[in-house]
Length: 627
Image 1 (cartoon, rainbow, N blue to C red):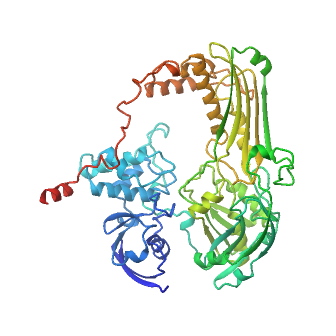
Image 2 (cartoon, rainbow, N blue to C red):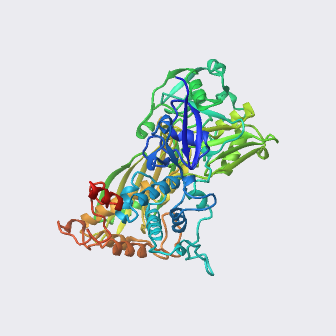
Image 3 (cartoon, rainbow, N blue to C red):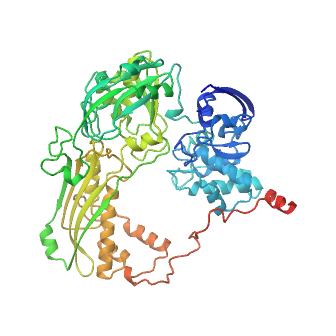
């Protein structure tokens, strides 16, 4: 299909471009016009990071073919204010601290701008609904909504513009609002994330990934891919000059599959080419012969005799076992009036950070291999990469680009090694940006877990003993699994004083997607089980759920499960605040009937039909009258 010539206006300036018919408006804005404030988070019109105005209407530019922009007037986040200035909405976002990682914020600013253009008097419920097409994974939205309300009132003259002025820290930064130094660059779209960065002569990387969960690699033929015009290099594990293995605790993961693949989506080869389309086409020309092996997908089966072995160093597939012992659990259970025994399970969870994995690598004039990426552990990554590429540490440099959401998911060095190898092989900068599908298929997840729990209690609700046994699925590689299991063991029994306990946390290898760090890693899975047990115990014993927790909570002087003596504890104050804020009705769980006083308060949002709270703008009302 032949290229098309289009002409359109972007931020007040005429632009003429010759485009590929397959390009989206998002591609033209970012790649051709360098307007990288418009982000790509999902590529499917779900997240709103790519929001722009097209002929005055807010649209998702990832869904709009560039050809349809011919003759249109486009406004991006960069065009909302004069260079160096901010709109009232952008200033309000800065004031309230509405931006955290910042990746969603340009799209949020565009949605907020659209909201107040559509209805300058929009109330909080309408603001929420009008901005519902934009996702934030960091903030919880409260400060975003607050910013829109402040901007609305400043624009209407109900608040003075001075409310946007800098907040003073006074004599101390503690207890005072101090604005984020990076907020102006985030709300204006000026901040560059790894996927926004470009360099002269930059190549683009695409990765060939395994369709099999477990298979031996018989052969890889890259000749056809290497012969494709525009391809600069193809790399495989054979291109690793040093020790091919990385990980947080055990260096069991190769840069690309070596000898066999262990999960669907594992990198097998990578292509660096002049453009993404050529690189993607080249990956399809790589011929890989596989010999499929039995797959292992259930963590319990991983421990059975005769189970397929994932890694030779761990013939029993055990990544790590963390035991904790305190007191005498047999004595504790013997003293119990009630023994509860339950099983709990948690699922694999995707981080869904809005910035997909991305990175840019190059070899500088002093032969220093440099990698820019949103790595959450750059010092560790630097040392691992030095070993992989067989260079002294002073010849390896990691630069942490802004992290567009991480939540622990960017602690692991999954793709940076491939970028470094391609940059070394070509001596040109190489950039890789994951698609959302690629990110979901290949990045580490929260550990799925299965917990068998026994708890003994007296009639008055005091815990006498706990037996806690957790089995987690670590997936194909170790990553952060040891740390997750350690944290799960330490936090297993919650903030409760327990004299007798036996805790075992285990994590095993399987052929599932690797598991890694995720907020409160290990603690989340453990506390789901423990707090569920506390609620079950409260119901069985006829106790108020708050009260049973107070009777067992740690206090100053308590000894933790790992024998640490606490000098302070705040759980009593936390529970009191939660009880008050929730308008809690005291009593055992089973005593509440159909009428409750703790629901339907002034701060409880009533359900509604989407759009029901939109009020008519003055222009719409006038048009209706005229008709």
